[in-house]
Image 1: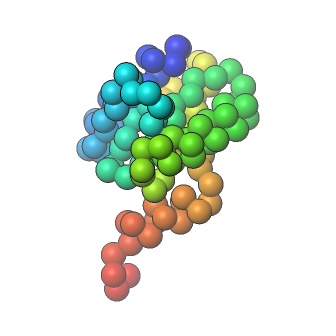
Image 2: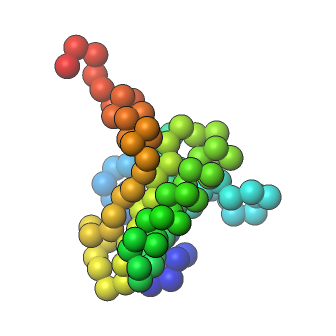
Image 3: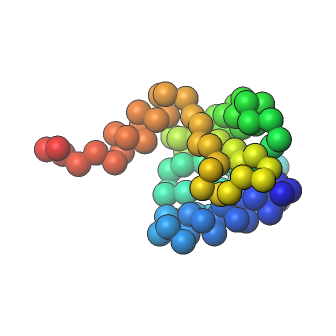
Length: 109
C-alpha cells in the first residue's frame, strides 16, 4: 500500500468511527501533518515494511508537524504491508499521551 492510499484509508476509518478528520492542504510551504483529527491531534501516517523504523520516523515527523500546525498532540499511525487497518500501530511521546488523556477527562471522575 502506498502512503497516499494509506492516508486516504485512514481518513475514511476515522470518519467511519465518528471522529472528525481533515486532510490539510498539501500546497503549504511546510508539512503540517497528513491528517488533523479530533481538532487537536496531528497524525503522521506511515505505511512501512519495517514497523520499528516506521514508528521512529513517524513519531519524529509528527512532533515536528504538530509544532508547525500549532496543535498540542502529534501521533504516528504506522501500518505494515499485508496488515489490516485495525492492526496499525499508534505511537506518541508519553507527554502527548498525557495531554490527550487530560483533554478527555470529565471533572469529578
